[in-house]
Length: 503
Ligand code: AMP
Ligand code: MG
Image 1: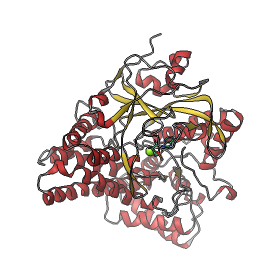
Image 2: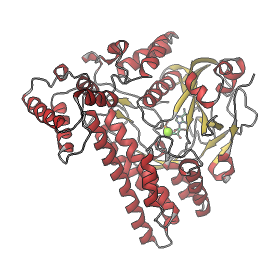
Image 3: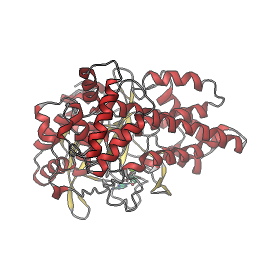
Image 4: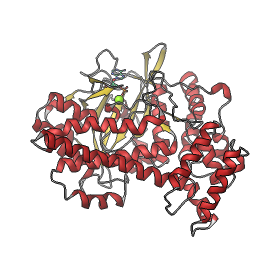
């Protein structure tokens, strides 16, 4: 069978400090429970083959493909502010698939067994968290947010032991790369300057060079414009940092605009290519509140919704520090250059957020008061516990009367200002309703819906709710009748939602 595998292994050409060669540990009785047909197609892989005995064996780690050189990648990271050595403790990169369009994607098995970086862990993953990563990463993709993707979930037929015994699973994760801020931190701490340079060059070629994966939809033409400015900069490594900062600023702005709370923005969970990575305790905010935290381990709210932009910058500061030796031999000069490059993050975040929030309220042109107008709305939403997604959804439907803030004095005042603002643009009402529909999803993966689907799959082996959820989330801007049901809010008893780390 021509499966379509077209694997390369460019990462193993880096010095051996960067990884450990290790094969996945076979599982007892693999069974395919979820497969992403469209993603398989776009990678040039045959979905029929992936459902065959051989395809499943590959996705389970029971069979090693010809041309595959499995590795666990080394990295470090600041976890909740504390620096530690980490690495792929339960994941393996089996190779880089070159798609029919000539793009390169890491194919990673998550839950594939112990590695030299496993520390005390078992190297395995439970079904619930792997399905969760599948559902949420694919929802993010459909929402237009750069993200790693999910190709398949395999049940291993083996139990994993957490607080309770759970079914084990392996997720096939697809990423532009798995190079993290923590990968640079690791090399900066334990490698040589030559190795650091090799990693920086590799990252450039892989993500930013015109013949690499290029912008891949991260920032579109804007990257080209900014490029021209960057070309004037001296060090190519400053240019690299500036580009990483811009993508990260754009990414985190998009999270904020959609109400996504990553939950564990440690530096090892930040991909320098600008994709959202590592769906552990993440969740979408219901009522708008910057203090929203879901993760049970985030007791101080370090990674609360409203802190994400600042944490993004903090993490990039760690990247900049790791890169310092490449900027200049003069430390002071290197620091100045780094500071300047980091300001690109602030700018990208601000610009993308403002552009996005304008679109969310139907504004095409720019006026200096737009930011204040949007912030005033958010404050009203916060004061009345208004649902983030459904408030904007109601606006997109031309029905502000369907929101909980309707009828409140502050909102009545705001509505007048907004209507006056909308009138100060050439576009018609039809145009701005369209703009709002394109920028305000009709639905997001509501926590109670995700939980209900996972419960059926994990406890009863019933994957129908997971499949249905994945399907409705695949077109979040459709505003279809089928989606109505999924846009409903949870019962008050389901509030106070908590997520647990994806182990
Ligand atoms: P995460 O919280 O998923 O970003 O993981 C942080 C670190 O813990 C990474 O180095 C993971 O590889 C490692 N890790 C998480 N779960 C396990 C596990 N079950 N076995 C071994 N390592 C793990
Ligand atoms: Mg991680």
